[in-house]
Image (cartoon, rainbow, N blue to C red; front, side):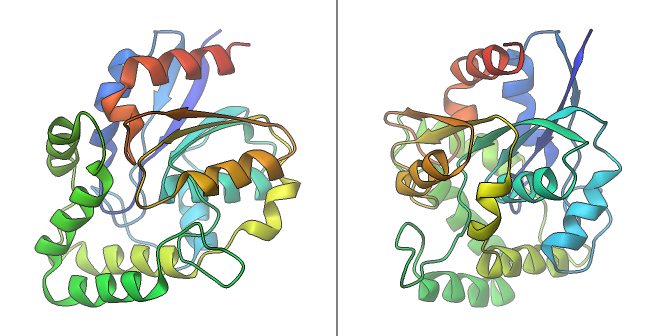
Length: 244
């Protein structure tokens, strides 16, 4: 029987970013690739993690496996905690429970960096998205190819999408899921790039240690999007985890 895999992309992108991984996955799965609220062709939602998760819930079959990347990973964690009957397992790629540094959380971007990024997005959104792509592909042995795929998969920061994209940056700035992590009981597979500059490896290591049932794989010479630079390896790990 085919298993349902729901793939949740990251900020500023669209569901088309999953094409390389989808091509590498076997026909064993039924793939669902919704756009996040206000991204691609999806309608916007109010700017809270609860509202964004609720907007996605109708696209998630019961007993599904959620594959979340970056902001999509935070939404996957939230959905797994709030709707355990829908979520059987989690695959988290480039994940962190908190995107911004705090006194007790150094494994993240400095708050001033993200604040400046949000201000720049208000005035020069296209250039800001290009910088974000560069950060995601930085340190990856396949940097140029990864950056090209990310660029092709961007949601345009036009008049129809800019407000929702700004809301997504607000979620990244404000979300802190650390308190709920011990209550996520589903099995979790963490996939992370060793050179990730947005979500440092230490964040994934913390998740692996704190989640009740988790295992971490770190890809060397890989940035924030290992499913783009290593799609076959990621697909093999996902298949082994889901079908175990």
